[in-house]
Length: 240
Image 1 (cartoon, rainbow, N blue to C red):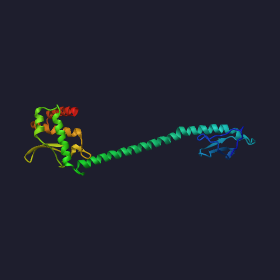
Image 2 (cartoon, rainbow, N blue to C red):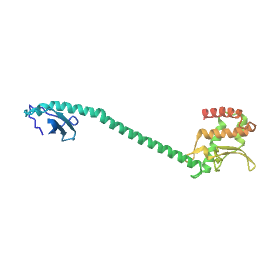
Image 3 (cartoon, rainbow, N blue to C red):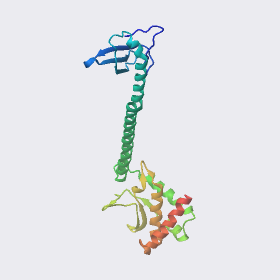
Image 4 (tube, helix red, strand yellow):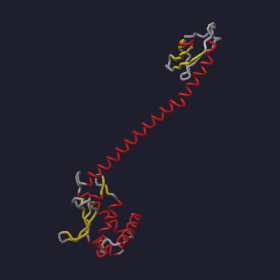
């Protein structure tokens, strides 16, 4: 440890600026000389090779300014490259955690929606029938349908069904036809999501689709059917 006087130069830690620096002189092979600088307070250290005159006992005090400069420059280099790499790694770790969290939420959403769609959870029949009724009532008030469509909406009931939504390899959203001697429209749970909340646009499209089938049964699924359906759906969503 070098104890400088008031007139002698002082070396400071480039990180915490403490003057409590441990200085150790080491001699290597072929008369090489090294100085180890270590801050007692924050333990920042550096290892610097120097030229040591054999007969000059005050050489270390004269070397302190150059040791300080080299130590400062080394810490700047570490801050610029080494620390930045650590920060980038931390940022990458944070992004990976964020990505994993996002994937978990998406997976949870998908599994919840799938469980609901496949009927794993309780099926609140009356509550969902009430939602279907409210949607039909609102559709009747929209300026998007001719009198024939509105008559079908008044005449043909749209009933929520707890039947399986899977038909072969496809998902059923609605059906229109004669069931047990009654002309009805079936609405499946595929039109709903989480805890009975309806998929608004899907439920609206399903209702219009099936009402149009009952109003124009001879159209089937010809291009004219979908052309009319798209116009009605666009209007309905615009005025909803």
